[in-house]
Length: 589
Image (tube, rainbow, N blue to C red; front, top):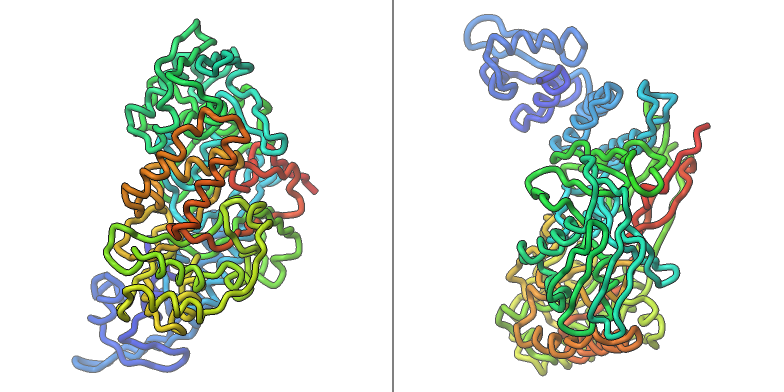
């Protein structure tokens, strides 16, 4: 329902009226009727209300053909901020978030409202709520993506699945080992062709049903039924045998030493055997979904969780209508107090965590052009120089990359390169001065794209920019020959690396030719059969193949930053550097 605020904002924002503070403007009832989307009769009622509350001064015209005059008594920004604050005070968080995305405003005011909004995010203690529950509220700068484990492809959604569901086992990055989860133990034959998992008893799904081996078998079969992009990993499984409700055996066509990695990854989340992808996701994890729509997803602690129940009772994740800030916020100030931006940092701590993976450039080989020639790609290697990129742009770009793995990049002997060398290589290609399109994520990579455009111009290479703002469709198709992307690897980096090379739904496979993909298929075919050292060597060879041919250009390793209130305890990072919500707890004053 429209309020007195929205009526005022419509008037003040109308470009034809061009209203200014305390400057009378001639208007007609008919024009106001169009702006306010109401009848002429209601215009007079609305204007009278606005005048009563000292928003405007109204002087009606006398007689036919005479204009009335309207004078603003309050500024657009002041009323917008007042309306925003009132929505927050009344607990209308959804309407407040929509207001930020739907009304045109200057960057200064938008930043101010965003700070105020972040002050409203965070913790609601049991002393403030009648229910006696502890609730953490978070903001995300894009809509929620796919939450199906068979097809999920974005980091946040993968992380969220790990809070709602469980796998048979879990990977511990600190010890580089596997820990029991839904399976309490497991064993394999000497030739690694037969694996048996023994399931925990008493594990319940969120709807109260017991988890059994039938659910595990159905979860694996579901990957094949849905033609998951990760089927390559499970191709060696010939069949499964259910040995009672709490034991399942996997028979493989050939030896597979990598199987534990596959049963700890998000693809092998265990869902109910009759799972309906059109219904609310049901898992066995520490949190269950209680509400999900385009504006918010609400999670509640699952009291029947087989592990340790979360300290938090509720987690509400709100999604902004458009990208704003890239940082992640887990703030915990007083819920009903509005703090101004100048004071917003008083009780906040910042934590940084370098993420595995890197930003990179690849080439769309399905499009014709000079990028098919190695000298051109070598020229782009110099233009997109990792060391210069980090030195020039900085921010969360912490180190230059020659690999997805930071420790491999750290061993590189980095030195400056000259654009003159790039110019010489460009002359060896068939580049004829035509503009080349560069696809990149709007806001997130805009500075890199503009930096590349400027450096390319110094050697006569014309780059035009194609930003896209679809933060859900990471593998958005483009006809651009140059593509900027970022890959964030799982904590289980071996799985993350092989998944990058073999996942049929990512950007690498989207833009490479079948011949290039075949080269990696041949190289990596024996990967699951090798011991740990052999797998690492093979992944290094695969990256060497990328560098040697210039099929992918590594850029820089990124640092992730989160903002936290000092009252948050139990901070442990989960997958992709996000905080493990199930471990967080709040120290009340």
